[in-house]
Image (cartoon, rainbow, N blue to C red; front, side, top):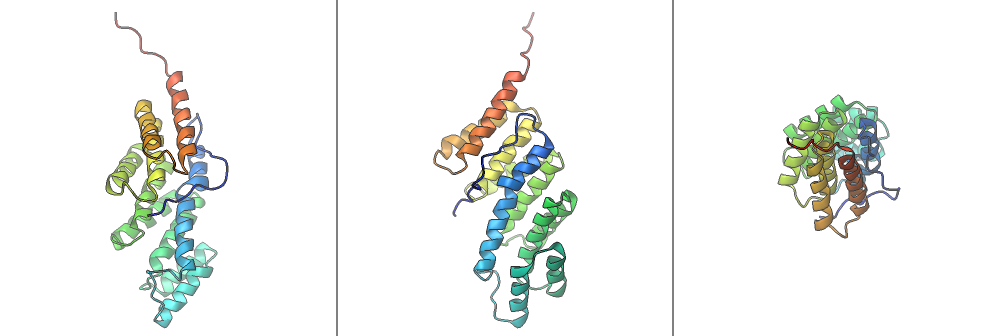
Length: 223
C-alpha cells in the first residue's frame, strides 16, 4: 500500500515547547488532515472507487453530493437523505476532518468512534482509528492517545498512515516526559525507513526530543 506523502511545505514537527497549539498545527499541515483529504479526494475522483457502485439512482445522487460537498451542512444533508448509501462512510470521515479543523475535537472524536462501531471492516477503518488517537492528542489526553497510537501500529505496522502514528506515539511519550522512549521511536523509524518521504519530519522530531533531554537536570549522585 502506497505511503501518504508529506506536503511540499517545510517540515514542521512540533517544536521544543511541545505546546498543544504546535501539535494541532502539525496535524493540520502534515498529518491525518492531509492524509484523509488525499484518501477521500482519491475515492471521489475514482467515483468513490470500490465503495459506491453507482448502479442505483440514489447511490449516484449520493456520490454526486459527496463529490461537490463544500461544507459541513452539505455533508450532513447527504447523511440524512441517504443514510444507507455507500457514500455515507466517506461523508462521515469528511465531517470529522472538518470538525477537527474547527477545533471541535469532541465532535470529531465521536464521529470516528461511531464510524468504527458502524463500519468496523470498512476499507477506511484505519483512518478512523488514527482519527481517534489524533483527537485524543489534541485534547491533551496523552496517555489515551499513546495507547491508541500503539494499538494502531500493532495492528497495522505497514499501513500508509504508519508514519503519522509513529510520530504521534513519539509526541505523546514526549508529552508524558518519557523522552528516551520518544527518541527511540524516531530512531526506529529512521532506521527502518531511510528513504521515506517522512525522514525529514522524523529528524526534526528527534532533534526536538534531544533538546529536551539535554535540558533535563541530571539526577543528583547517590551519597
